[in-house]
Image 1 (tube, rainbow, N blue to C red):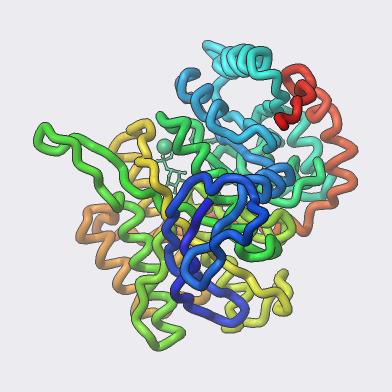
Image 2 (cartoon, rainbow, N blue to C red):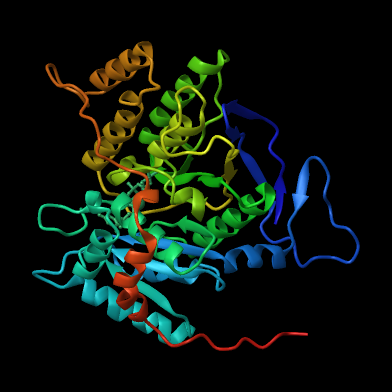
Length: 403
Ligand code: GDD
Ligand code: MG
C-alpha cells in the first residue's frame, strides 16, 4: 500500500491524534530489492509486510439480524491471514436466526477452506467465562452478556487476546461491498506498520457514503451523527490545547482496529457509544489532565486516521436509529470529566435544536464498563475453551507458494 505520512497531529499529554492520511495505492506490490519509495510524503508498505501484521490480527464482526448475503460478503472481504470472530446477538426465536447464520457461515467455511469462530452474545458459556474472570459488569439480570454492539466487541476482543493475537479490528456485518471490507483491513495493518504496532488505534474515515439525492447518485462525506460527534470532540480538544482544530474525523468510526494490549486496558461504553468513548477514555487516561486510573502515562498512544477509497454502503436502519446514535455519542462527551461547562451547554443546545432532547429532558449518561484489565484472563480462558473448540470449518489448506 502507498499511504501518505500524516502531515500534522494534535497532542494532549501522552495521546497523539494524527491528521487524516490518504491512500495512494491499495496494493503497492511485493518488497523490492531496490529500495521502494519511502520519503517524507508517502510511505510504500509491501504486501508481505501487510500480511505479516494481518497474521497477528483478529477481525471481529458484530452481527444483529443482518441479511445472510451481507454477512457472507463481509467474510469474503476479510484477508486470508486474519482470524475471523463473528459475535452475533441475533434473536433465537421465534425463528432461530443465529442457527441460519451458523449454517450459512459453515457453508462459507466449506467453500473457502477457512476456520471462523462464531459466538452468540447470549451463550451462557460466554457469560460464565466473564463471571469466572471476575468481570460481572457486562452481565445483565439474567446473568447473560448485555445487548449492544460494544458488548459484542468486548467478547471478540477478549477471545482475540485468549487466542494470542496482537491486534483486534472491527468490521460491521451490514456492508454491501466486500472490496471496502478488504480495504479497511489492509488499512488497519498499514496503520500498525506505520506506528510500530504498540498502543495504536487505527480508525477509518469513509471516503463517501453514496445515496440517491434528487434521482442522482450523491457521494455524501459526513453522516448526521459523525458530523456532530467530530465537532464536539474537536471542541473538547481545542478547550485544552487553546488552538482550534478539526483534526478528529473519526469520532464514531465503526471501522477501527486497536493494539490488543491497549484494547484490553481500555474502558468501553455501551452499544453505539463505544467509538466516541474510546477517544474520551484515551484522553481521560493518557491526556495528562487528570491522574490516570488504569493507564500508564509512559505509553505514547497514537490515534491514526486513514481515509478509505471505497465508498461505504451499509443497511439503512432509519432515523430513530440515527437519533439514538447522536444522543449516545454526544452523551459520552457531555458526561466526561474533561467536558467543560461551555461545551456541555453547546451540546445541550444542539440536541434541543435538533429535536433530540425535549423540554424537561436531560442527556442521560451512558453505561461505562471498567477497563478489561480487571478481567482475569487465565480464568476466562479456562472457562471459554469450549467456545474456541466450536470453531466452524475445516483447517485451512496449506497454501502452495507461488514461485
Ligand atoms: N454482536 C452484536 N450485538 N452486534 C450488533 C449489535 C449487538 O447487540 N447491535 C448491532 N450490531 C451489529 C450490526 O449487525 C452491524 O453489523 C454493526 O453492529 C453496526 O450496527 P448498525 O446498526 O449497522 O450501526 P450503524 O451502521 O448505524 O452504525 C455504524 O457506524 C457508526 C459510524 O457511522 C456502527 O459501527 C456504529 O458503532 C458507528 O458509530
Ligand atoms: Mg450499519
